Image (cartoon, rainbow, N blue to C red; front, side):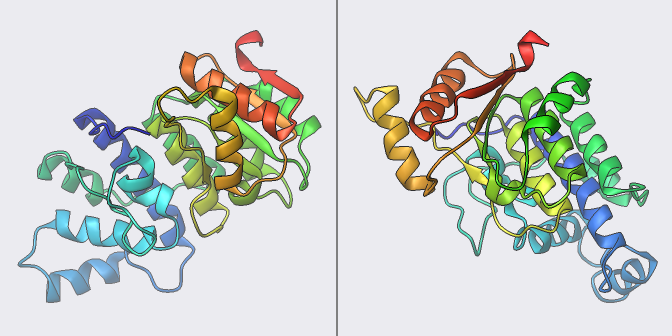
Length: 263
């Protein structure tokens, strides 16, 4: 995927979603980093540093386990990110005062499902996908591999996986999208399900003169995925993303399609 620096609006969405998820995970953690005791410890030992530094330290710490939820590298497809340093290069955070205002909030989501809804709202994806979710629940089991393309598709799939039993976004979902919203939504779903690592993210870059079919064959090898069962599309996927998703579905044998545009 070609590197495109995220806009300030996108960076703000990223911080909102990441901090919502961090509060949920921290609430269930024994070693708290966002409670009153942690605030007091920071004031005692790090008060000479701005709050934005503490904010980024918190996100970087969570990113070591859940990179696609907390690090700009995999969310925006930035260059220079690695498993042990997923932040990436070329990311400019919003103004300090805005980030510090977000970080100062301590309202914890009521549940993982509530946290996901807040994340979807942060990215403008809090749309009604109930019809698609019903169709997905009828098709998805712990052995189903799902190709996803489009933000609304990611929202529907994330809701089903988070609320389902014995479902793994980390190993069953394959995202075919350069959209940072969709990428972070899948990353957050992994984090809320305590699934460490980056979800399967297709690399949409093609070689000159490479056909979609040839790209899909190459990407199948890179992802190390033998098959897929279901393709989920939504109208906010770009034309090229839909074509890539359909090509990868053909190579992986996913004949079943749910197109949210038809709902």
